[in-house]
Length: 110
Image (cartoon, rainbow, N blue to C red):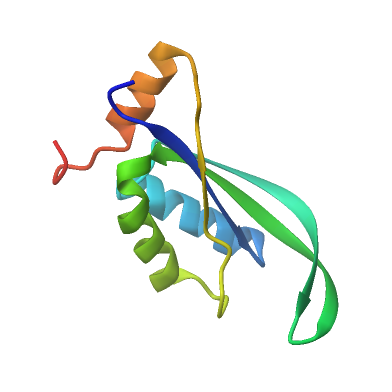
């Protein structure tokens, strides 16, 4: 594969924040697609167990775009320590991966 793909995951506390972040990421061409879905997260923060509704963003992009995407998320995220995880894509439909690569390439990357 010429352009290794990945999925970057982050969460947001509200649907509005998740949708705004998803749209901004795609508009900046840092990813070809972002899916947003409601989840319930269980985690320990500051020594306290939390059970919180959150919105999970599954961001389809190129591995090479991760540093710029991570900085973009950090600048706009409301959490003190946002989840930002990169998961490599081992394989995929060649047509989809070509589309993903084209959609994740901004004018500065062409």
